[in-house]
Length: 606
Image (cartoon, rainbow, N blue to C red; front, side):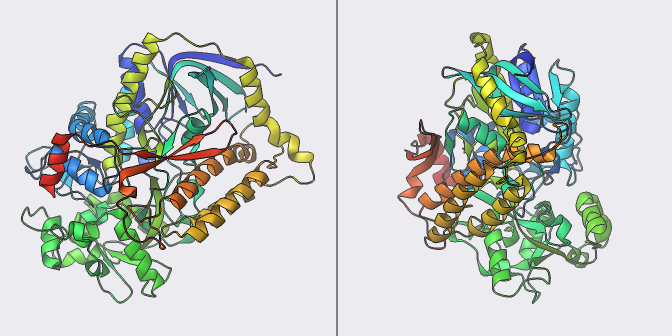
């Protein structure tokens, strides 16, 4: 058996995005030793791709906003499947977390009187998103990094964790390897925080970066933690559709928040044709009134382009399917039309949406100040993930915490735009705080050497298979999985297709057991992909099985064979856990009754 180094910390944070950095900062501030594992280089986390803004009820643009309205919007957007305690904490704490970020040096756009500027976004009743042009995530990561590196934490860049270690039922650390040399490292820790982001790369068309493969969700699952709400996958309505090399790349909802409209090939604003009853009182059917709303008119109603993402995505899909799509299989998103309303429209667009302007100019040869963009739905976010305690972020495994996109509960059946960034800040802080408290109260658990050796043996198996006759190419297995998920477990689902998907996932799991790679271990993408297949297939199976069991349509989960909401399914969440037999077991968890004062807020806001 090869030798390997053991690194000791009180708290190990897996992931260096917004949630991971905020957790590490909080844990360090409480005086414990913190290690942060970065799968890529520091500063390359997927959070940098978040564009629109941070949702927080600062009430800087509209003084009618409050945490209560934000709470009600989040619950309504999530179709009331949310963990109401998480939604309460999020709405209450988000303003303080944004102001804290500002105090640490974040440079937000400003109102005329110098306060943080906020913009409109889909599903939010009032302008609520604090932003930095359309580069908010980048500014967040810059600020958290600049603040965090002075707190005494250690960073392990270009490392990948492949297994969580346990002693009995408690976490004892993790096994990882450095991607540069392929050498294994053992991390001994009293508490582990998983903050690894999403899983978009198990689909063919996705806005997610290369490392969003659901690894953290799978790590927690295989360590014994429960998963919940895995059927709820968000397909962002507006990703690039041309050229093919950047298909799926995100176009921020901020384009629509600044006045962009959706049109079909006939030039019609098709979103006016389908406004859900739930939102009719807040949504304009008059173009002029919708324009006034985007300009901050308190008395106007929002345009239908700012309805929730799941609804807009399905409307776009319908236009394409019925033959009213754009030449490359999307629809048109037009911000250039505002030249009819604003004399200096090109300069205004470039100032408000600098990344979007350069993205289309450089990648598609489109000047968005003069012509519309071609857009279509793209896999963007998973509302489901690891089941955690709302107040502490601890999973069902003692010492194992989760925060950010990989943790479930806040968003229910559908996430509102901008809530993801405030989610990272609010629950990253809570995870860091309670992981540090846990580490102070508990002693280290010994590392089980036999467990470590078994993990490493399994990790090296793809090299042993390279000489076998029936070996499989890991890249081909990944590609087959992505095609299958896009086709069978996408925006619209049916029982027949989900059964087919589950059968094909089981087949791919058998094929993945023969995935092989050659060469050495340093920067070997074939080896990395072969190991990653376990995580991708685990998450794919969880999504497909949960989607099959939820026989209704709600939020990000749409069943063509069960197109309506079900009262029965509104009262329960689907929970998954790895059984003693190694198979995925499912149970329905009754939803906790909402606290009376919060229910009163919901009733009043309706």
